[in-house]
Structures are given as C-alpha cells and as structure tokens.
Figure (cartoon, rainbow, N blue to C red):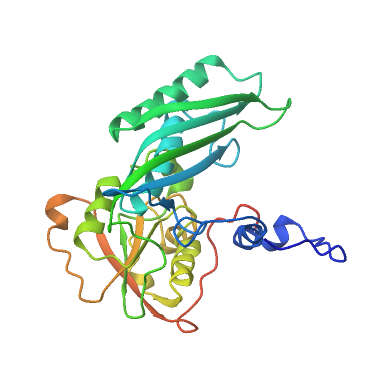
Length: 302
C-alpha cells in the first residue's frame, strides 16, 4: 500500500480523470488479491479447493443513471439481477446467491418496491439463483434511489475465462447485436449465461468480458488487459435493427459477450445450440502498440 505524500494533493476531479483512471489509482491504496482474486475482471475468482471456483461480484443501479423513476419497476428489478448474471456469464460461470442493499428516499412508493422485487424474482428464478439477504437504508430528501447487488457464483475448475489471456492473431467475436440500449433495450436484455458456459467449454476463448459500457469502451479494456492492441472491422459489427455502427459502438448496456479466440476457432454447434443468436467475428487482436484506438462508450465520470 502506498503512503500518502503530504506535499502532494491532487486537486483534479473525477470528471478530469474518468472511471478507469480512478480505479487504477484506488487499487494502489489498498490490499488486493493475486491475479484473478483482485480487481480488473468481470468477477473476482476465489480458489477454495474442490472442483469449482467461487466467483464474487457486486454492482449498483442509481436512479437517473441506470433507470428512471417512471420505468417499469419490474423491468428495473430484472435488470438489477441480470447485470450481475451477465458478469458471471463473462467468466463462463453462473450466480447462485444474491444480496441486495436498498438505499431509498422515504417518498418511494411501496407498490414500486414490491414490483421491483417481483422483477428480481423473475430473473433469479430464470437462472436458478436465490436471494440470500440484504440491507435497507434511507437517503437524504431529494437524493436518488440506489440499489446495490452483490452475489456469489461458481465456475468449473479450469473453465474460468479472464480478460488477460488474449494473444496477437486471436479473432475478436461478439454475441448478438449491439446498440439500442438508449431506446429501452437495457431493461429487456437476457444475460448470456448458457452461452457463456458453452463458449468456455467449446470455443477455446482466450479472453472474455460482457459489454456493459459499449464496444468503444470495452474492447480497448479487453485488449489492454491482454497486453494487446486491436483492429476492428466496423463493417462487420452487428447492429440492432434501427441502429448504426455509432450506436453499436457507444450506446452501452448491450450485455452481450465479447471474447477473443484462436484464429482457427470453429463455431460448429453454435447455431444448433442457440438458434437465432448471431456469433460474429468483428476484428483481431494485434501486438501491443499496434492497431487502432476507439473513442466513446459510457464513462461514469467522463
């Protein structure tokens, strides 16, 4: 852990440096686990022995950022769990026990909260998980509602897919179609849990993550974690109907899976397992310092 330099006080703000730089600075100030157990991937991986590894994840929804008060509360409840399930899917695993913290204004309607919980229940039931506990708190008058979801899951030993294993020459692939979250898709998506497990077992992925902040933000993250650059074939990017490439790159909250795999990867069996869900090669990883850069995507403080 680094000591604080009493002669230096950084007067910049969160808006000045952005989310990724903030995280990089904060993890230098606190003890973290070894690779896999520390920050930097979709989930933390904890080896407790046995045939499976434990996955840990936490996530938050903030009113006005991730949902609006007039949104369908049942859909918001679904999203709150599905976002976390998507992170488990990106590791090739699944979630099983969830903890929910509600920090709500006293003016929140009981009916809204009950429907929100029904939505969480819909998603938990769909993916075979349970609510294990939680916490409630108030927020000051006029503050936004905040919903925090933490969860524990698992992945088979030897099957966890990190962001760090990509190599130059690997193809870059994505499930489904991108763009359209701003038109409401962010409340109706299905996390790719079965698909993530199948990819991990059958397609030899070298790195994988879910697309939460947009391809323009997340593809550079995956490449950097693997010590690579990238080249994107924009014409190949699969776009949601009614969306263009700019929206596919920048809207965010697609919650599709982005992964790299050896250039000789064969997708045999995908169409039979997941009919109607596209699997598209959109580029390749290249050596670090080569390739291109992307601008856009979601940054909480940008």
